[in-house]
Length: 441
Image 1 (tube, helix red, strand yellow):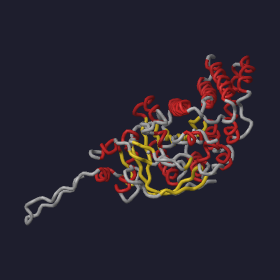
Image 2 (tube, rainbow, N blue to C red; image 1 turned 135 degrees about the horizontal axis):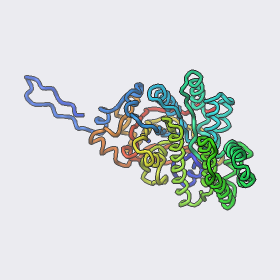
Image 3 (cartoon, one colour; image 1 turned 180 degrees about the vertical axis):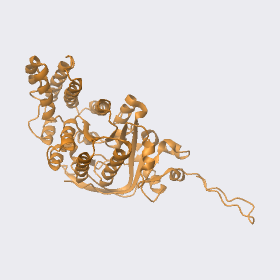
Image 4 (cartoon, rainbow, N blue to C red; image 1 turned 180 degrees about the horizontal axis):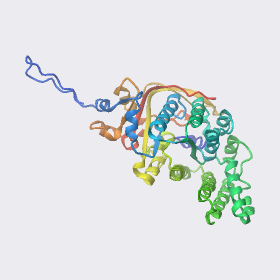
């Protein structure tokens, strides 16, 4: 059951889941001026468009932000992933960024980071084993290549880059083991109680099997497990820190992420109101985890997620009532900025909702429909480009403030376009004319 990765659509899909004027020339023979062309939105946007092959203006748009949310308009197109790697490399090399944060489980991020920092494990095996179920969209050649690049970078630089996961759909064994080992060392009297509280939640199978089995557990049982994980966190939170306060802070965060996972699974996903609240909870917690990491490490970081998470403003239907980007901005203000993506046409991989087995397949969409945001964006420039929406002049600024159909494709297909206001949603917008499906491992 793919619960956490969808962006937003029908309840069934949500259960599969959990971005001037041209003056005429005067001549001596022509005493009157040529009529000025009207300032249409696309002409105003064209004045601000920057070609995607030059990232230096993007660096200036990022400015002093410590957290940059970088979206995607599908969860599995090559060009979005390739652009993210390119932007991250630029931010690392030119702006001092050090963390790549992904919409994936915290424990999966720990395992990837162990490879990135110390070379522990085989990266392809890690990607295959950790990116399953709701996180299967990351099991791609593109993410494997990014992780390998990060490891290679660390082999040749003293300032290390790191990888983190901010999500809570799965909690791997290492989280339980780290908390238990710390408790045994510093609070041995608490260990029997902690062990009992963790016993029924510590996974004994892989990511996919664990997540798929969890949704089948009775709601009452999931609520009991959530209560036990919360009790364990409260047990540790009330203790005096050990001699190493940094180590204590990390272990307490591990215990907190375990409690977050329990709480996420305690919602009744078949109740529309509960489903909506689970989405609010998820985006809030992903934001809290991202901000915690930035404050704990001091790193400047790129946050990779769907447009529907990094954005500020919800869609017209507000199936996600408040987004991760809005929560982060509330917490850190101007230290957060975001970048959304749109595209004209092309391909992506997604779960096929028309097949009862819901396999991952490649799908293709044609040119954007009339009245959509993409219809106008396609006319702005013949090249792929990006815009600083904060500096756009009228009438384009007014145009950006209106809800219009916009492709926002999550991990399943088919689905209807969202109604999105680009201006209130994003600081910067990247538009690609054509995308192709990502390369699955």
